[in-house]
Image 1: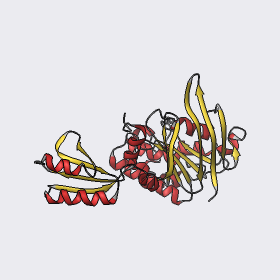
Image 2 (image 1 turned 90 degrees about the horizontal axis):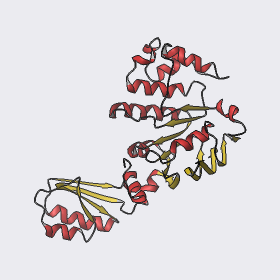
Image 3 (image 1 turned 30 degrees about the vertical axis):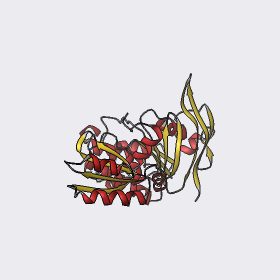
Image 4 (image 1 turned 120 degrees about the vertical axis):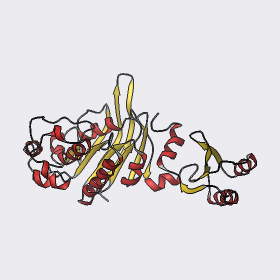
Length: 304
């Protein structure tokens, strides 16, 4: 597949602080590529350098075969950007805002067509202040599409939204991808990255720790399998037997709920036999997640 973005040894320094530390990756046409990490990991700074909003200290960035530093204006005609926080004219209607943005580009999409895409056509004459949080985020995303871009940058597009609004945005992002766009997004929601992204790069302290297709990264986890069960009278003898095959943890201090982290299929089968013999109240078998891998790599949860 053709590369639409190529980043080599990208670095950004603020005095003695290294915000982005020699980062390299490529993004292929038509994929959703995620930069995943906690706040302060360097995701937004990396994105802003690729977008041409921030000048790198060193390194190379090519977007659609153009050097972003030398040809920033030409690249901006072909990309769409949704920032982490956006401010719009408070006394213009949604349609007027989109029409204004469209006037900045040689090519543009009809404002009504964009509003229909997110079921906001009935709000065309409304002010931005009248929208709910979810509606504002949907509007923010279509505002990045006014020039019919080839590449769309989404910086933490679902932060602060309730679960239903977040899932609605996931559908919208998938729809944008299905229109042939390439999407680069940042997020600190592990589930979001796992569902949406074709490939992810996990960042911490300005560096990329690992990068691959999501399912391949999960396979690399130290404990790729897990078993969760509830038993209010679990004997110490059973716990000791299970420890032969896995790590046994109480979940969030709940004495009756246990999770086992397991390294291979054989150990999982043996542990399952023991658990089934005690007839637990609840039993769930699963695989590792990106969050499990993140904790293994960094030693902390995404919220820390």
